[in-house]
Image 1 (cartoon, rainbow over the protein chains, first blue to last red):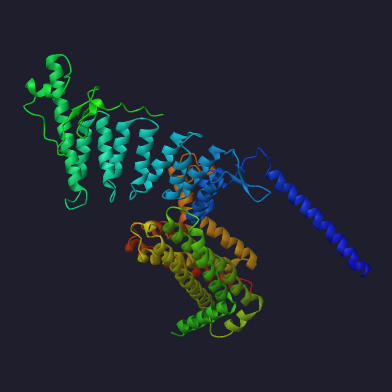
Image 2 (cartoon, rainbow over the protein chains, first blue to last red):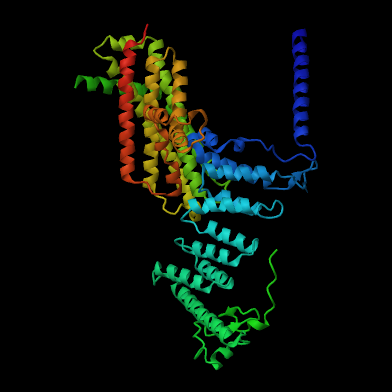
Length: 301
Length: 272
């Protein structure tokens, strides 16, 4: 072996060792304990206008990338062990940064479904409990996806589940039901929530407006008509209860008192062939004939 | 008639030269890669797969077209000067405007060819994605809208090419022309945004109150964001035929104006 070749081998080996050691040190430093999974800096920190300018005609692609980035950040809590297995780690997520990624993605492509769905999957729950921020993302999605009932449906769910506001939630469900090709259950759930919140009249008006734009041959039309008639029956009873209360100075203890006192000649017909029922709080049901015996619903967290 | 013949001859020669640069083979390879990448990238997502697929396909066409304009187009123009081939052409009965128009049309043909190949490849991969995941086909998606968006994309590239020819006609070197072209492209992409910011926003920094200047600039630079119809195609949104025709007219008229100015400036250029 010539002296020249030995020299090159020696120098090459030293350089390779130096490179391997330094690169390994960088990797060790990045993967150190207590570190966040990813850096919180990135293109999503740019002001919206600057971001739009940078993205140019590739806004949609950049939005796709950002949602993937967000998904990768929160996607797993499994880490490979040196033995080849996995262990669960409690990753420290920078939720504010994640929220910014979702918002940035929406600035670039306000209609992208993946953004609001992934945001809903993480942000409103604890941690981080960012409900208001999630609602903002969902509102943007609802505004820009007028063919999609799901953002409004999710907004309604959050309003009911987290905020415990049945009337507002019901109105959102009913808005979702107005979207073309929305499933029937949205109108029914929406009307139920609004009525449960004590606004039967509003529920009827919304149902009537929805029926006015639906085709009679459309699947589910007759079910909606039944629900409307049931709500109209509830409204008749609610008005009779108010009149009874004014006259007698107390609420009726049962619905039969309305007919025996002469306030109503007969209870309105129920399209579901069930008896109307009034619970202890005075709420009228058309589908729970034994409502007085039901266990009170637990409050939402 | 002779002038049209000269232009057509130059256009065909330029197109052939473009293909001989092996650009076409690179495009075909890219089309194959794009088809595979589209399938891979799309499956990384869980919702709106159709949107991702359409957007990816059209973005790939846009990106490749820009590479062709900035590198292949400028190289073909610069080669004529550097290899002194231009003197051979201009010594014949070919005027400068015929030379520039012929070169421009030849490059437009190369761009058209690449758009067709890439557009077909993207359509194939999209068709597969939409067939495999029918639940994620955008509600009013239509292949006509996709084709219209593709033509708009090509028209946008033609406008950028026309601006590049203009820059080439007065720049001192091909590199300077390339820089100016890229800058014009970036300005053109954001001209609509800048106009909106300055006209609608009272807190636009140094640009506040400069509405007239910005409006004047927006008439000088091409408004390339108008040609960007990826969003509409990806979500199956309404895209009228009238808007499409007006966009085509805008692209053609702007390009013709640029080539006219390029002819005027090229006459003053030091060729030797």
